[in-house]
Amino acid sequence: MIVAMQQHASTEQIQKVIERLTELGFEVHRSTGAAQTVLGAVGAGVDFDIRDIEVLDGVQEAHRISSPYKLVGRSFRPEGTKVKFANGLTIGGNEVAIMAGPCSVESREQLFTVAEQVAKAGARVLRGGAFKPRSSPYSFQGMGEEGLKLLREAGDKFKLLVISEVMEISQIPLMAPYVDILQVGARNMQNFNLLRELGKVRKPVLLKRGIAATFEEWLLSAEYIYAGGNYDLLLCERGIRTFETYTRNTMDISAIPIIQKLSHLPITADPSHGTGRRDKVVPMARAAVAAGADALLIEVHHNPEKALSDGAQSLYPEQFTKLMAELHLIARAVGRTLA
Ligand code: PEP
Ligand code: MN
Image (cartoon, rainbow, N blue to C red):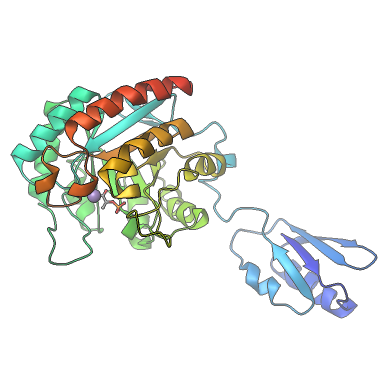
């Protein structure tokens, strides 16, 4: 941490700050200029509140240099994390993996129709919510275990891995036998009890960015899972809430290179929730691969007008097939291939 004292800070004020920093476990290096004193503090643990220093008398500003997350930070694994699956798929390497399917599992006919089409187009993972976090309690809440069974069956039939959202701790043992990746939705990014429990699971987790989460908050949430011993962790940018109302969320493409700098975890992009509009999903999917995403999560529905959730942002299967052909070219242009 760097602490800049005010120009006319008294010797006493400076001494108090040094004492407080020393108490916190820092080794303090003092630099006294003609008008201003700057303190460099190194070596303490991660658990301190920078505001405790900022509010001390005579302090002009204080800046944290080290990150508060340790295990998910890039320096912990500079070479990057590769999440490997039994069927040979690796996420986080040179290949870009595409996950696709309906927002919600609605019926056998719906899921199998969409699964067949996305598999044919080259997707490697089938998505579909069985437990749905809906803004309204009157909206479709998902098929529950019945939906999970259908996902597993469709995944096996069309040789796709399966991802589905877990909303609470009690669903973890129920879901584990059916899914290959447990998705934590934006609304649960800071459900710390759930995250801690997922740290104990030995199954990959995809952690979405919260609706209004900073990178630091997102990575601290990832730290909960990683610190529990579950290292098979994927992050997913899914758009954030801004002042703009045209799109459902504002898709933060810059999150992709930023996460790659801050963390060793693979980064997925979800242009469906990121924009909320079908016609904007394709360009944002292209942009995400160009920006370096390790995987995409895309909603596809064979009859989106009749979808029970998120129809407006679901691609028609033909659109998805065309997008896949474009993604092949874009991936190649940035030195990668589609998985
Ligand atoms: C979803 O993937 O269908 C979903 C609910 O996503 P999010 O948590 O990003 O809103
Ligand atoms: Mn959805």
